[in-house]
Length: 458
Image: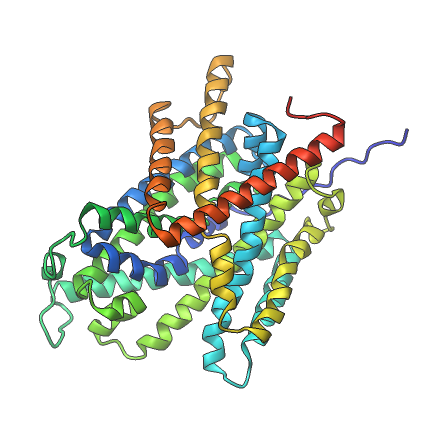
């Protein structure tokens, strides 16, 4: 029998500062710059409560991930942990679901950015922009994790700087330091139907939109495995980054609903642009579009990284073809990177044929996968923590309030799903996601049973 080749390893090339900025950048994306307008139009100023609820959930989810990553760093992160807690088919299902989600989202983000830039240079068609973005960011990921980290760091710096500048100008306008044609204060928070014009139903409905804005932060649990001190880095990142994210979100939304009446049609179309228009800052339209393009490309860059590392991990655990575990001399799983962006090249053709229909279709396919992923993470942490406590295992980082907080998070996620089922659009997404999850689980069970001649989960 020939010797089994040792698995090829990734390089520990990411710094704690880069991982921190990845966490910030992953959450500050198009969901905040664009999607927040829809949430405001549903809940009014009470959308602040919606953001507080969703923000609390993601802080707990990230603390759960930090506990598991600190104990066992892995490029498969939550997929690896789910396999340890509930069997290989659970780990396979979560890993492939996450990968499919990111593969589709990469194409959607490239399409969204191209839709904006094509308006700047009409002679350069949308499909050509998509191709350019895919090629450039794929190249950045193939150059090595250090170069990826640098790209993502500066992408995140631009987004964070934009948010800080927005908060600073907004505070000065609200304080009366920067004059406006009409006096601006906090009257809009109670005018136009009150603070919560849609009542609890409006707040709950907005949560369904808001919660998806925080998707992307989980990439830090994957990135930690490619740093020199995974346990220490994930601990520092979660403690510092999550509170900053909540501050940026709540602060930005407070400025918007204070400056602009929540029922102003401009808020739904572009909330940040509507607020900046009140501040009378020249070139606001182009400036916000540029920030949105950066946000989309940053998220796309992070998702190419996250999807390739998840596929690499699946390959290492024999849940994907072994070929995807090949690592270049620069420590890059090149075949995993290429596989993860392959669908985006198909999207180039789709943008050529149906430039206005591609993005809505792509987004609807994976619209609610983040709920399933978070639920898996919460259940996994509950199982593994109880197992560790029973066995007396040492955990470098421990979630506070266990098990009550873990159980409460699972119940809250279940409640969000129940509420979502009352909305036709959300119900369609949930059913599609449920069908996709079930299909992946069945395929995983069959593949694992065929691999061993019996169920490997038994």
